[in-house]
Image 1 (cartoon, rainbow, N blue to C red):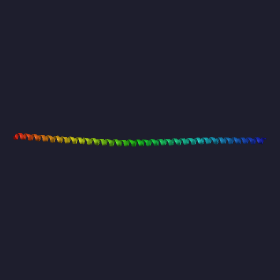
Image 2 (image 1 turned 90 degrees about the horizontal axis):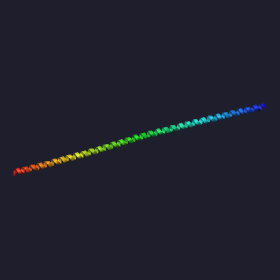
Image 3 (image 1 turned 60 degrees about the horizontal axis):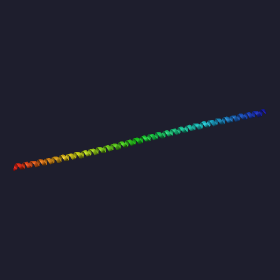
Image 4 (image 1 turned 60 degrees about the vertical axis):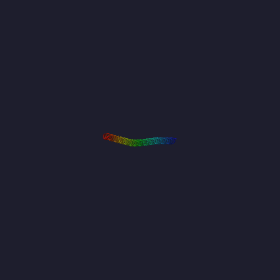
Length: 124
C-alpha cells in the first residue's frame, strides 16, 4: 500500500512536471508568437514609412520638374512677348521714318514749286 501510494505520488509529481513543462512551452510559444507579431508590425511600419518617404520624394521631384517647366514656359513666353514688342517698335520706327521722308519730300516739292513760281513771277 505504501509502495502503491509512493508510485501514485511519483505519478502525480511526474504529471505535475509534465503539466508545468507544457505550460512553460505554451508561454514560451505565446512569447515567441508575440515577438514575431511585433517584428512583423515593425517591418510593416518600416515598409509603409519607406513607401511614404519614396512617394514624398517622387512628389517633390515632380513638383520641381513642373516648376522648372513652368519657368521655362514663362521665360519662352516673356522672350516671345519681348520680341513682339521689339518688332512693333521697329515697325513703328520705320513707319515714322517713312512718314518723315514723305513729309520731307512733300516739303521739298512744295519748296521747289514755290521757287519755280517765284522764278516765273520774276521772269514775267
